[in-house]
Image (tube, rainbow, N blue to C red; front, side, top):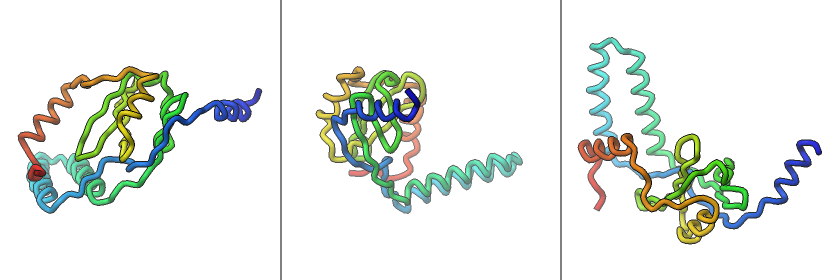
Length: 173
C-alpha cells in the first residue's frame, strides 16, 4: 500500500464529533494608558541598556515591544476547530489523543479557553467562542483526563505576581 492510499484510508476513518469556529488567539483592545505605561518602562530600560552598551539587547526589547503593539491592535482571524475520534484539529494543526496528557478550562478576558497539555511540549490553547463547554468536556474526557485545577509552575506564579505588582492598565470593572 503506497503512502497516498494509506493517507486516504486514514482520512476516511476520521469521524468528526464536534466542529466550531472561533478566534485564533485571545484579543483585547488596549487603550492609550496601556501603551503609555509600556513606553515608559521600555524607555527606562533602554536608557539603562545604552549606558551598559547592550545595543543588541536594545534591539531585542524594541522588537518585543513592536510585537506586543501588533498583537494588541490587529484583531485575530477566525479558525475552525474539530474534535474527532483520532484527536483534535485546530487551525490546521492536528493533535492526536496519544500525544495529549490532560486538559482543563480557563477563562480570560471574558472568553472560555480549552487548554491541552501534551506529553512533550507547551500548552495548546483553543478558544471555545460560543461553543458549549460541557459538550466539549464530555467529548474530550472520553480520550484524555480532565483536570479541575492545573498545576501552577514557577513561571505562572511569577507572571501572576508581576501583573499584580505592575499593572499596565486599570482593572476592568
